[in-house]
Image 1 (cartoon, rainbow, N blue to C red):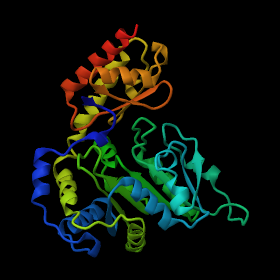
Image 2 (image 1 turned 45 degrees about the vertical axis):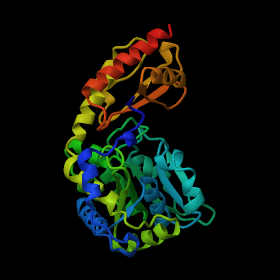
Image 3 (image 1 turned 135 degrees about the horizontal axis):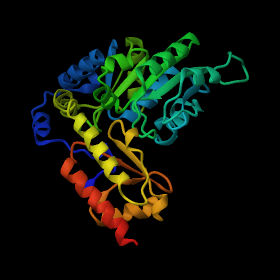
Image 4 (image 1 turned 90 degrees about the horizontal axis):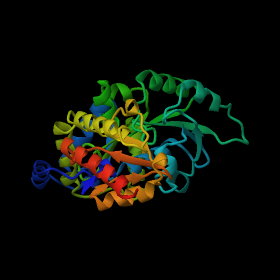
Amino acid sequence: MIDLFSDTKTRPTAAMRQIMANAEVGDERANEDPSVNRLVARCATLLGKDAALYLPSGTMCNEIALAVHCKPGDEVICDATAHVIGFEGGGPAALAGVMLNPVAGTRGIFSAAQLREKLHSDRPYAPRQRLIEVEQTANLGGGAIWPLSTLQEVSKVAHAAGLATHMDGARLFNASVASGIAVVDYAHGFDSVWIDFSKGLGAPGGAVLAGSREFIAEAQRWQFRIGGAMRQSGIIAAACEYALDHHIARLADDHSNAKRLAGGIAQIDGLRIDPTLVETNLVYFDVAASGWNAEKLCAALSGHKVRMGAMGTHTIRAVTHLDVDRARIDMALAALRDALNAGV
């Protein structure tokens, strides 16, 4: 199976598995795991923050950040396509008790001017605005990269209004590799930020949330509260550190493969895509003109041993990653053509 459903399908390499087998471990919940302690210190430095916390998933990073920054009833401003709205099981409402105020951005990115339009003075009959959230890269925006200048302007407007700022950095390293801008520069204007290791970096799990010491102290309380504290988690943290050493620069290969995939899709009758909009490793294309709907075409593709994801009635997403090389991209394109032709 050529699995392009998500970069979460990436499996740990043999070398990463060996590092995991030999990892130094201890009781992470008691701050005694040397591999975890080393990883969080390194990530805090990478992101330009005072402290960091190792957590099982990026979703937990988002949910804890909302709970620390906000009180129940407070408002979070984010893009309408944000992961916290559509892909976290209603966690913002169930766990932090916050309201989400969506901005109609472009490809998952909103401007400082759009943010200003959302701001209002503090008044007792309206939710108190506490936080703005951005997603770098923007998943439903097709892996679009927030320009550094836009991030700077948005964070400046937010802070001037007394709001905190949070960055969902699930694919922050993809943005950095594609743009040449360091992750610390992207994270600079944000009070909290996290990075994921279970996507393009290829670790079997784990994410690191970073911020001020006070923020992380409160985040750790939430970590205990919702069951995110682990024990000998250095086995996984060692894989994350290996990824930092060996899997960041190679994200450029995923971006190149995504562009190749998009270019090939653009040549197939009935499929619609603008390859120039593919900036990182996410490829979205429209199948309406082919006469297929997305779910049926994905089902047909699976019969050709290729997996992609339906993201609406006529939209399909394909995600490149470590386990899919250039040859497999070409095989996936051939399978896509065969599946379409077989359905004629």
